Image 1: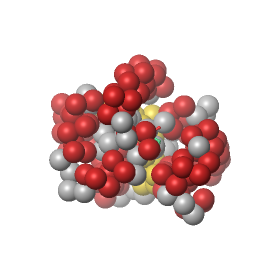
Image 2 (image 1 turned 45 degrees about the vertical axis):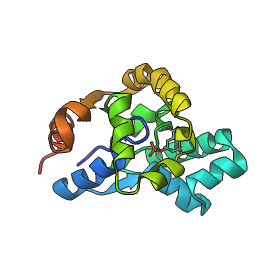
Image 3 (image 1 turned 30 degrees about the vertical axis):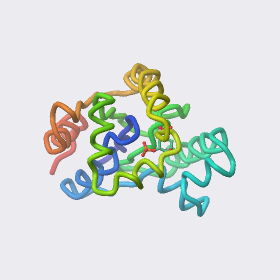
Image 4 (image 1 turned 180 degrees about the horizontal axis):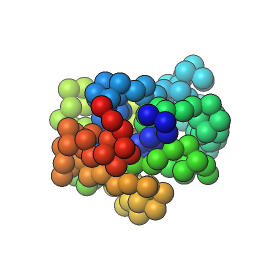
Length: 172
Ligand code: S3P
């Protein structure tokens, strides 16, 4: 894979899970922007929000984007739900929006094995009404910055992976 593929989308849509399956199937490496930030700061995302606030976290996302643009090639990059706001997103690689309805996302998280932890680690998914408003606000913006939109709710994970590979011309 020559270019990077960047998977964006709302919290809990399954970017990380899909990216790991994709990486295994197509023999590429997957890195995750939240993991990069946590390792650089040596703190969990929830702690970074708690201690330094959201603006500080957003600045870390921009630093990460700058580093990715300069230093990373041929990699599948899964992103935090707000990473799409960095100012060089399309310079990093092909941007794929993993799309689904808010209800599907909420049920996916709620019905997962460790649902409580999945909500707890996401500071912006603590309040259902606020999360829904954020989803509404971001839906159009995600589509604006994406090269491709793949609907995982309609396709399911397996077909979504195949579709991404096809769109981004990744051969198995
Ligand atoms: C955020 C999404 C989170 C994480 C942080 C902020 C957002 O990542 O980056 O809590 O602004 O949507 P996930 O999309 O993996 O939950």
